[in-house]
Length: 183
Image (tube, rainbow, N blue to C red; front, side, top):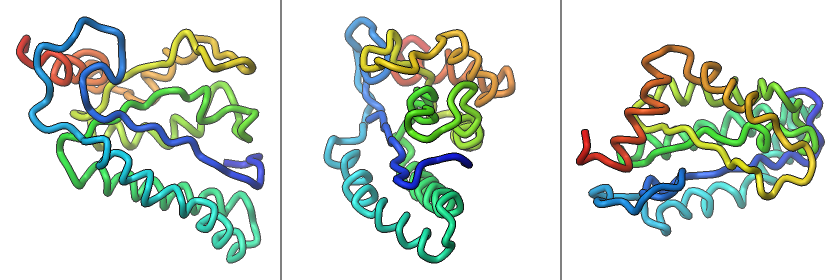
């Protein structure tokens, strides 16, 4: 986390766990039995994000170290995100866009996006049945630091190091989420 700017603002993205959220495809034939509503998905952002600056400022005041303060806040928000995932079995997540979440212009290290891999790999390991892979290719909102898509794909074994995790991330879980009747 070294080298980040003093105005740390993580970018949080959440999938609602509904068909169509991750990849272009034919219309779904069946929606999940209980998906996360817009209100519930927004609830995490509503409750957590207003406190981001205050949490950072308090941590920086206590530590007098901007890098340590960023680490403290990131750890707290990851714990909150885990609690959010633990609160319901039908919440899915998509570890995507390392190029955005660890971008140099945002104070990150950039490619090879080690901070992203370090933060996301434990989530993939701990929630292996509720994670799917995706990207924002062709990167329509990127005007600088356009990523090498091969490097983004290289992230897969870094966040899902075993063949079993990779198969769940890329095959089994998307089938369960989007086309459960075909399993």
